[in-house]
Image (cartoon, rainbow, N blue to C red; front, side, top):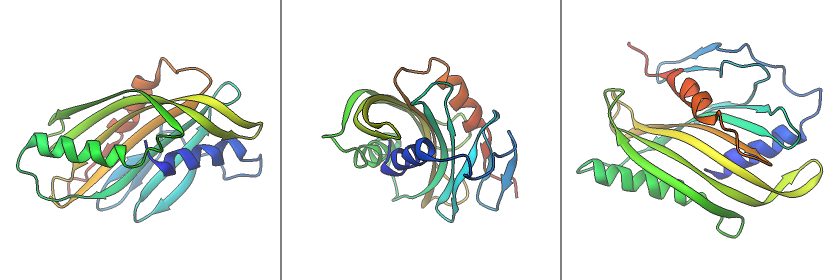
Length: 190
């Protein structure tokens, strides 16, 4: 989990009716580095579009629920092996966690090449003990599913695909939602 994802969640919760217009579910946003599809459900808005990546957000069904789907770039050193790559990704995720705010529940890091290039699947969750919401500070559950990959055409560049939920209870469908979003982010053929 990183600070941007958490700050964006606050923006979604605090947003008013005059915020950005909703995006078309499944809409393709293509560029030469990565093709990104908007999550395939209603209510997503674009929070950030820059050279660093794309971030989308939507409110959940119940009060206090928010979702963030984002893709961001990552500079990578050279790796001797898959274990070194996993260790680097783990450090990347852990450096963005404020231990006085987030109480980790569980984080799993698993190396995979099912896309045909090195990636690390990261799943986990924590308790956000100081979540800022429109109704004030609350204690909320935070869960995420991410895929961090080395770009197949640029070995010194990586990308992280994140899908997360923050709310009073866990979303039991998060894995399926995250997998669909992750599948919608692909390296262009050309």
